Amino acid sequence: MEKQAALRMLLTFTILCFFYYGVYGTASTEIDMKLRALNKPALKTIKSEDGDIIDCVDIYKQPAFDHPALRFHKIQMKPSVELGSKKISSPNNGFSKPVTIQTWSKSGRCPVGTIPIRRVSREDISRASSPSSFGRKTPHIHNILEKAHQHKTNFSLIAENLHSPRRDNRSEAIFFAVGSNYLGAQSDINIWNPPVQKGDYSSAQMWLLDSEMTESIEAGWMVNPRVFGDSLTRFFAYWTNDAYRKTGCINLLCSGFVQTSKHLALGAAIKPISSTSHEQYHITVKIYRDPQSGNWWLSTHDIVFGYWPSAILKHLQQSATVVQWGGEVYSSNVRKKPHTKTPMGSGQWPAQLWGKACFHTNIKIQDASMQLKDPPPLVEFSDEGYCYTTKFHQETNKSEPYLFFGGPGQGPLCP
Image (cartoon, rainbow, N blue to C red; front, top):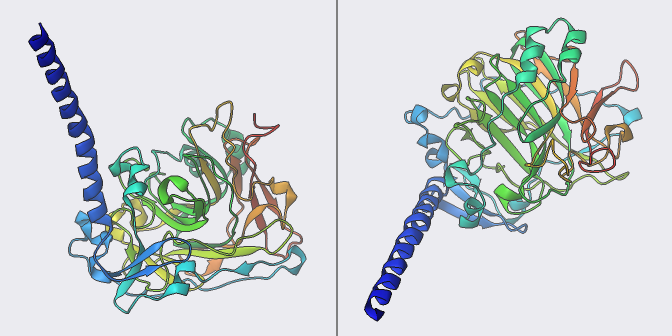
């Protein structure tokens, strides 16, 4: 009897060990593979005062070229044309200061022929639901924009139809322009640092979308502890060509985006940030299509980051149909009670205006004329207007409009 009991215990222990090492061993192997794919060999390493480790990687060995469509891709070092600067100051609305220096650059610079890439840690990937989902947004279809595209000449009909509920884990407060041939867009995005709940993220950004509403290229700032492991405000870029299902990612956390700049790192922290009723700061984001290559370039304050190659896109190879400005909160607790406490923007209601609410300004689009223009009349939409909302504000007909957006999340109006 004792021998049988001992054998049973030994068998149980063996099964448990097999299960443990089979499951967790596989997960560990997947994380190792992901780390090798993302952390390319560095020619120089810079330790930033904010805790980031920046690897200076050979520009020809960056993650982009692991993409099947880019195996034989020739890097385009600079755009054939650049999106011009067109800015109108609005003294009556105050002014914000541009942020052009990233914290890590105070500790060193990457040599010519390399690009700065923020190093990914094992802990970063472990926070994701799986290594393959690391750095990716969850599936999402811009079905509301589809209604707007179908009725783009009837804005009253758009407003009437915009309140059909969307069942996913994102909440947006946005302004958007619908057209047929957008080749670029820009915005000055006010910088804040909203306190984000565990597992959530909050962003202020600009999107360019295709006619099918499944392709998107995006940029702005976000606070995303799950990806970055902290609560710092960071610059980010994103792309998808299948409604966020299996393609695309944040920054260089998958193959796709080709970085050309040695001065700026995607995912680096942005400082300083705005404070209520005090100094206001912004980043300028520009996204524009190269008429010769069809690549979509990303720049900030006239410093070019790099581009999304046309080869990884489908409908956006030609032009964008929708440009969208605003903010987004991801949480498993949006459209639920209790609602997430994660704020959008500054966390203040847009009606608070300058110095308190987050904004986009200096918004422009580029069409087939290749000239920067004011966008057509904008449509406003909020998934949860009692939690996050929008407000268009313009002091005079000649002053630059401000697109205020955001909100506190959970509160008296958003239980």
